[in-house]
Length: 101
Image 1: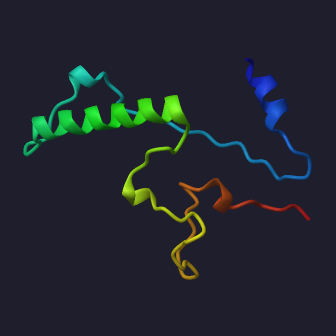
Image 2: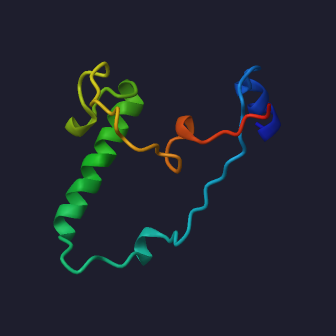
């Protein structure tokens, strides 16, 4: 699929769209990764095996069939965040938008 085709699929009139980008740096193959000083190789291998098993179950049975406890169980619950600072750099919904007027 072309980028233009995907844009036509997701475009909704009436929204103030902003162009944004993501830059990924220092990406390297897993075999070139330098382990941390106190890293437990056996624990890392178990964690990777667990993640692979969870991915396989979710691909086979359905998305979010198996998930981590930290992801929460009740999607309706959320922490109060009235005084939280805006997350301009990590949340597109909170991106500052200049409105011409």
